[in-house]
Image (cartoon, rainbow, N blue to C red; front, side, top):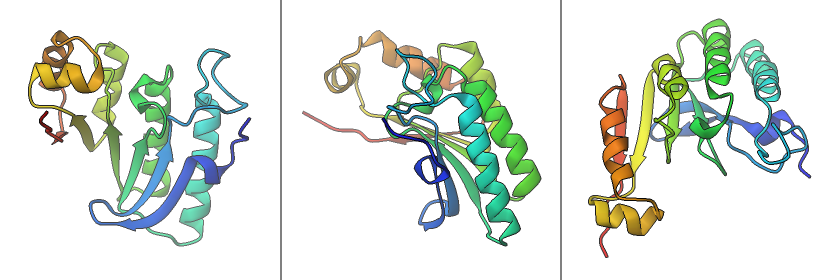
Length: 173
């Protein structure tokens, strides 16, 4: 089992080409001892928020600067976390207190936009980066193993989100 520390969930601030100096919070790390349940091995919301608070306070008091605070998912998409909205709202409040000039960013590879809770939470972000892995429904099915109708539903839900950045990685074959 992996024990959670600020180092295991939070990295940065580090210089990136796209986000400048960014702090990354990994909401989708699995296999932790402080998990949501036996079936869902994602870290509890309270653990993510507490570790984020400790680290953001430490960085701010130490004089570190951050242009962006980025939520990512290393093993599971952050939007699939059962407490995604709670985590989002708490991280937004922490950002407002400790890094008020930093932008809040979500990077999602497989967004769970069917849940209303997820769509509400996306309103807290300055940038919602959504990756679409394919150009056609046939390629979508081949790459993801999902039904082709799900691509249409995903695109339909994307039209309801404000401040969305679609990152398309189109492949062929």
